[in-house]
Image 1 (cartoon, rainbow, N blue to C red):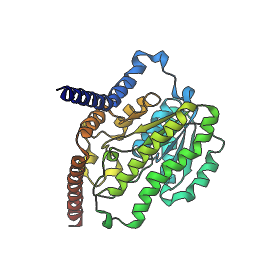
Image 2 (cartoon, one colour):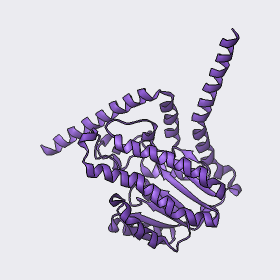
Image 3 (cartoon, rainbow, N blue to C red):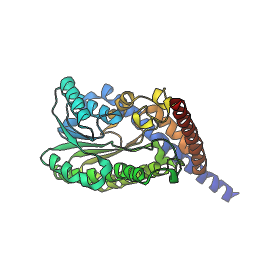
Image 4 (spheres, helix red, strand yellow):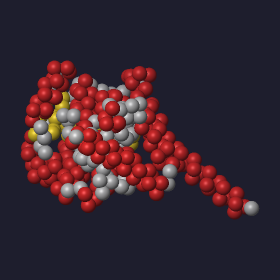
Length: 318
């Protein structure tokens, strides 16, 4: 009887610990969003806390562009890094017009791998970077099994999702450490939660981003560096062009502007977050399911997206 009682107590403690861990990011995000309204004097402006310049990769569309706009609105000068010079110029002009801050643009195609970083490092050499947002990412064109994805595209996904976050973080950290302050924001994905059939390479790269972020945080938090892990679920961006349902969006699939407006409020206050309160609730319920069930659900979901894409291709071909 004593053994049964002890096991019951241990089980209750484990369940309670799991629920606290799962709910914590949701509670942190809600409090961080409300904090500026109730305790404005205790919240330092980001530019004063971390430094006057922010660098954003993948900054001409989607979440990256909205991060650049939000940070500029908060008074930070921004360095925009992306592969399209025309889009870079357009976004830079928009930011300067709206927020009267300085901008700098760097043309770089992260899909090319390590060859782009020498140029980026030279361009950033004399800039006091306070915040780095590792946002650039590459997704499948549409869900497909491993043997169907072109080898070149698989390597591009790895170069953009893995090499970029590693190289950019390694590049800016020494100067941040020397100044004793700075923030690195690594944008991952909810696909990190389990292996994801029909998007195997993409989901695996996001597991890397998560593990990399947690490890670097442990290394550099004592030296004044805030390393944040942001893990959105579905957001209506060009990365999801394979599904019109995702592009149309809904309450659970916000547009990039809505998503980033919430996510930016967690910067400097929360170490790990989904960035959007409803994603936090979804994240909780996803984690409640065993991994094998999540894998099956992910496979079913991606088969549906694949069928939707194939059907749209047929319609356009008619």
